[in-house]
Length: 436
Ligand SMILES: [Zn+2]
Image (tube, rainbow, N blue to C red; front, side, top):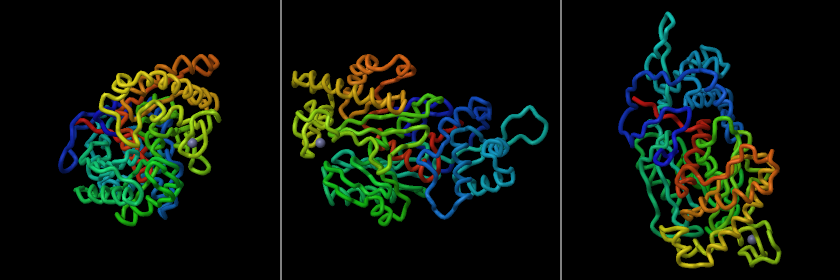
């Protein structure tokens, strides 16, 4: 996660230092890492493989064990060899061997001995070497794709934004050159490329259809992998965005729904600790479900699709042509009095979606995210009483309907970073920055 706008996660020791150069900092032993019950309980809450079991990559058990250890150290659930053996269930010699290889590969570093009251050699505390590998994260949910090069802990090293609006094959070429330029600028090995894009994305990372980008069956993941020679993971933008909001989830919560409103409308779902994309990778694709068959005509040819009520066009912000100004919702409201009733109607329709989501999935954390500044806050506040009015008291227990904790405009790109950590390294929680 990018640390600039991110609240501090409960388990990690974070400093606010901006990009560092060179080798991992020598750090004093930390007593923050312990294997107490609280940490174990929290770790269980999100310790599952966020993206499901690792795909068959030919490494099998060895790779799974490396991922388990990296994940435990990243979340500080266990940070000494002895704690790791207890935590993962692996034998101490196996843990030592895997830790040794992770230290040699510069994914882990040894911080030094942990102060201990017991007799004998104090155990060495381990941490993830956040700046010895990099991640490329790309967001194509805008007509001007942009990319970041980040450390494993989310420190942004390099930012690039394309200056022209692109569509179709030109947009694919732009994404490839963006990734190439970021890879070339990295002084450390890149572990992978994550991309958040609008539209349905199948399990192979092919964008089945992204109308606003003019993409139909674009094998973006395969193309990027072939061009860059790096592991690549392409995901729907709402799916990426929901990963970016995970660090804000309370430690005892395991499910989160993020409704993303742009020109279209989609939902990203983390259910029981896993990103849920559905049978045909189309879970959350609700934008073209007909809400009212007598409603306005939709770009898909039908009438009254959900996005004709709640998409940004429906409230007078046409992202397809011109971006709303930096004033966001306030600017729109000042310019056009018809915007306010349109926003209220969108809140009313979305409240219906949230009620069904809560009732159907028993998800109690719902985030409303939009690319128009100020809109998410307004919608969440307007929807809250509507949603509560339609649910049983028992279904309102623990219900939180809110805008994102991070900067809305960065959610997809932060999610693309989280996607790579989860996919390539098995890390579901953000990597801790260890204080000196
Ligand atoms: Zn439609």
